[in-house]
Image (cartoon, rainbow, N blue to C red; front, top):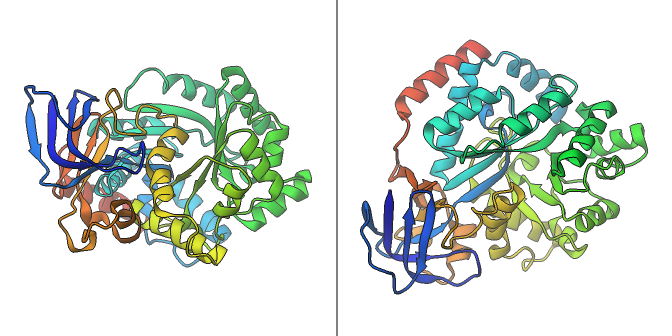
Length: 422
């Protein structure tokens, strides 16, 4: 399949410049970006009428199949929400349910211009099939904890899901320090050393989590992971709300990724991550995730971008803090690199054809003083006109091309009633 997008504005994310020109794809790759496009034959030529192409957003932390708990157990403290509502109902999930709930979540990603997600969940065969059946790209994150999984199982997953499927890859990981005994943590550290692979986990999401780790080990989660030799080959943490100066130094020195989840952290009253202080401490690697729909409750990168910028301005009491283009980098290029998708970070020849077309011909995108700022401060899902993954159009003008939306809605509601009751 060869696609030509012309009469386009293009924000490659290599820099802040807007290109007026064309973007061409062939199969899964971008073949041309710029002005003075070469002639060629295409399967489809799309006149964008001055609309914008950007790299697809990357949801760098989520639990996609948790769509079944959207608006189910809201307005509860974190521990009550997690242990009394989430865990008991997750225990009832079947392979069929994970497949359906994953496809629902992936559909929502597509409506937000998200072209890949970093997913931590269970029943991976069903999850992977849900993604590949609809052509959606995902990076899996290990989710072992005291309630399920083994270190040997994580190693098997690492090898199986890094076996060459162009849409699926895998990073070592575990749920969190407070749900995972030291023996397992040491096992994950050994795997990281064996494969020279990064490790990811929920890290310092709440104040209570950090205090509990200090009671158990005398140090913070980040410092514990460093002590165990888990961070020698990179990786990072999801949330990272309650970091001290030493935690920031470790993330800086180990070149780790901080993935912020502002909507979830607000809704669960976990706090506001100190991103500006982290940058001032020398940390350079930042990405954005939605977390799952049980705690967000939407999977919307536009909402997350606005919250990242707005919350930092309030936290720092400085309206100049956390400028828009930095946030847009976090949501696109940063997320791709955090997930190991080094060929999905920017729009350039040879990169993967993962992109979103943004409708600029809507009131909230006009006038065009600064397109990046429009996206971060004024943009919304209604502006996503098209989402392309691996050179295939999966979403266009409100329609999905690889799934039957009504059939999925019917299935997920039936399954949700079986799991959660009426």
